[in-house]
Image 1 (cartoon, one colour):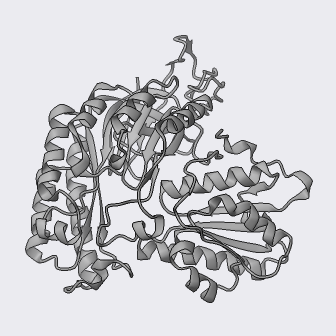
Image 2 (image 1 turned 90 degrees about the vertical axis):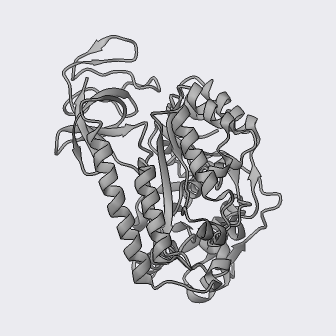
Image 3 (image 1 turned 60 degrees about the vertical axis):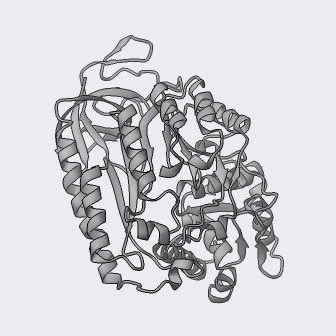
Length: 481
């Protein structure tokens, strides 16, 4: 069963203290949380201070060049601590995508690393730690194939108590020409619906009110509408958010499920990557521009208030100025509520890395900046249209310096979208319907008394109606009602 992070200190029998660095996507974070649970159950204490750790585990990403660079920089920082921080740090374990994709290079070029644990070997993390703790000879290496890998597993949550990610599948069959994920994470494999529902119920019992559904391709999950309907029946879960959806797999049944269930936030993360059909074909994206346009039209026709987040890639091999202009014209037409743009990264081992007509890095980045500047203008107009409207906000905390609360609306996914800042108010209704003064405690959605903030009594994880009064870049500001 999932557990809250605050139980992580139980250091039985004077065992080593373990530090964790988790990089990359939420799917990687879930793998980290599973490893945390395995080690905590065996009595290891998890520390957030690197200088206190006997072993540091770095769970890496290697999706694009910038992710590889970040992973290597973190490993080198830990290696420096191992060499210069006295005798406290005794071992470094590298996990995840970098360990899987660059196993020989990591061992050859980073001699400070004591163990490698691949993406399908996370359940061997205890063995890796014991290998270092017992000072066994040689480096510990576990790089198992994806076949037979057990999906899911108990974990310790590192997200705020009111929010959690839930992974419904592993791997990917799409084989986009620019992407290394199928080589690292293997082919698509779905979890059983009943196992996902069971985990979601356990998360709800811990006070989680928002679930974000993740996979490499969420819409590849065969019974997704049925799964979502089942999740909506769980008491305590208030918001369900869909991430990593493919436009060609947005079915009418899925749209109706989103529309007809109040717990499913009217938000969908749907990367399109481009709109030009020649580029989409070179990317090996299925469905082409027709599927993209169809998905957008059907989503907005049936769910008028939906927020669509997307990503695009600029500077893909062969992208002419005319093709890039076509992309910009489409973005101006489609007016996505949320958008991220990434300069193309030629990843070794992918078909696209060998394509002709590779663009200069500066040109790829120039186009990326141009797309984000265009999106900035669109977002400002869309945010201005929200002034005077009242929206529901999930409170995430209180800023003592500015004296305001902050949180997210349905239109804002954690970590990637903006915030809603709002001023305190004199009275707040507790979930039981009893008015509470600003300095009284109220019950949080999990049933635990919330500690009042300095200027009021709104607890983290509580929902508040906020009237928007102004726009600050990508963020909104308002007053609680």
